[in-house]
Length: 544
Image (cartoon, rainbow, N blue to C red):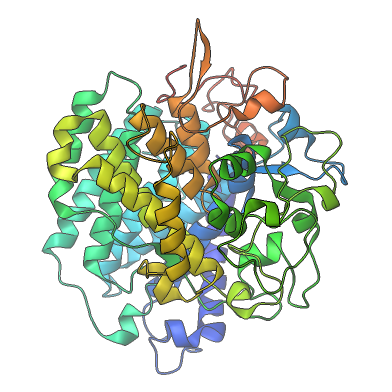
């Protein structure tokens, strides 16, 4: 990795974030009498900017939309050319450099860790460690072996070694455990001028512990199809299960505004600009046939109307009101790789969840990093896979139903009752609750718990739905970890229909290849022989 360039860029990014924070976000970040004279700690500014960038990387970069395409979420309008590398699985190392962006984010958190004590804000160190774990896990899930032990600590080593991906994962579990133990023993400030600097949890220590423990559970369950890690997974879940898991949605709202350059970045990238002019991405990026068909055949009209727009729609005002039937509107997903038949007028765009033209709550609403639904699905998955954990995690059927219910409420609150408090706290929504009750009662496999003969598949499919517009990478990770190629063909758990069946071009991607900058600046250490995205699955992939 080009650490010299990345670290210098990280320093400049941090300084720009400090300047931006001091001049543009005073109401969120004001810890000085005069925020334009930085007379005290710069760590809070770096941390706030880093948190914002963590979510931006997840939701508004190719990490999300390309991985989401390969997971059955998105397709491409055939009114446009382009997207060939996504459609054909032919990617070169000059495309999709996700590594540099994520390491820049890790470096910002490293600056927090290194400076926090000296600046009298040592409480920021553990959250920074947790967020580094979040980022390193993303790197492993994308690339496998990456720089870890030699990474981001100083400028002296510009050619860091690559660590083994399994070792990195094990180290992340230890770091998360240590951070949780440290936070339990610590006293954190409660003054509002300090807590508001934390745009995730407002320096609520319990929430940070729950977040770290839920992230730990996610990383452990990435390995639950391997078979060789079962005892390790069970013991590590049990060691911190008593600390609890996320009981709310994790969102970020650093002061988006309905003006140029300050819009919610998902809205402005995939929807409209501040003048309500439609973006090319809104016309080009469409919903995939896999997700649309699944929502339709399971009579999931409520989430269908929240996650997708009817075909050809640029804007619908007011939003479709539930209850309605799927036949009231025409929703059509695009098969991945389609060369024709999916024009703007005959396909569905990304929906009202984030994109409602000219609606202030959509233009300025929060971005979702981690959901209560995923927390519940992870607990259900662990208890189904390892029944001994049901004592620690609760009844899997209850967690499954709670996960589905939480996602209905999230969709409802994002589309109809937008407000950070409603979204974060999983507030009740009359329409969402009624829609959930009708949906979950249907005797359909992978919808109704009792009707699902394969409980694990039901959990993973519902978790897959909950990642739409939130985390394409995590959906792709679940797909890769749980899909098995054997003598009977391709068996998959986390999607209702194999996304590659629409392409018909052979082997699907299992990773991203290392970017060219790595070979240019650190060529002696970059793993060799990984020239295609179909090469060298990640260690938790059972086809490895």
